[in-house]
Image (tube, rainbow, N blue to C red; front, side, top):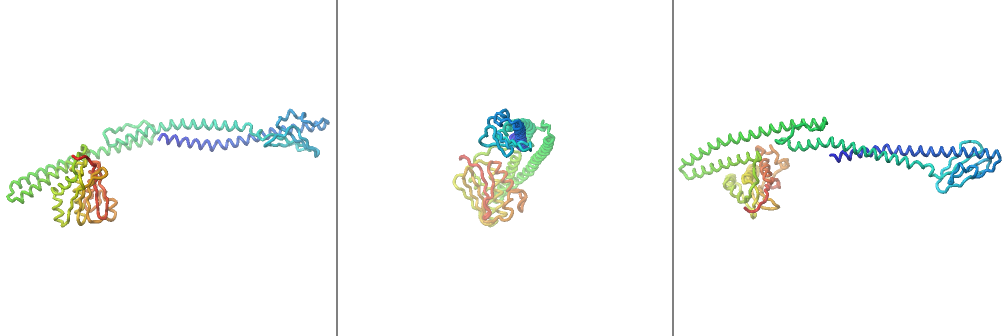
Length: 409
């Protein structure tokens, strides 16, 4: 910002110097030329008067008569009674001539080098150039002071903006003595207060929701364990075990989302994404759900797929993509994992087509027939682990989740 202020102020000063200095120099040059012409004209008048007196007295008209009035490089042409006499030495090169303004029968034309009209012009332009340099120097000095006065509080304000919503945010006024900056500081303080209150309420809601959900889940687990203990048929035991697995999975999901919301997660460990996905498809009963819907679910893995990701993040992203394919897609669903370009890629594709505006805003909240947050949450979870979730094809519909690759565990 300081450089921009300096450059802009210097440009304005330069324009002002050019706009004012050039006309001043032109006018000064014209005045010097006019003064030189008047000086030559007065000398021509003096020469004409002296020649007229000499002619009346019968004195011979020689150069010595006007030698004190003519420098070596100047001459005078005297015209009288149809006679023309040249006194002095005519200059060579460019010349200027001035005729006496006597108006009588005798006229004296002074011939001098053209340079005599510009003897002082260089001094005028040198003075203007010196004043221009002084003006530009003063402008730079003032711009430096002004830029420091404006930039320092703005730079401090920008640093504080980066900490809005954090405990280290400094709400003290910026010492800038600039009303506009002070008003921005007040607005930032208000925004920080609102953000702090919003974060507090969201964290309280997250903690309350987690606590309130754990209590009924604990009771549900106890009831299912009692049902399993009272089960007499093997099929009932199997179903009870499956229900317990889903309850445990729901508790794990709640804890994982709570950790993600509070940003208390550690660096993800190394996992075999392909093996985890193949296992989750079976334990999460996804294959049976697709079988019940009369659709095929194909799971493939291209070589080793070791990556850095939280296992629960991978499971939840896969759940969202499979639920989306089951609810909104059609035909066979293909789940393929591969390692390429520094990422483990989880690709889920079905035979459906994604058309209309949903293709452009598919990850925005509220889009879709359901709650409209599944894909949004899945993308946020993937990005929290250093990956991403992308829509890579619309015909057929294909989503790809990326997780950072890692060495084999």
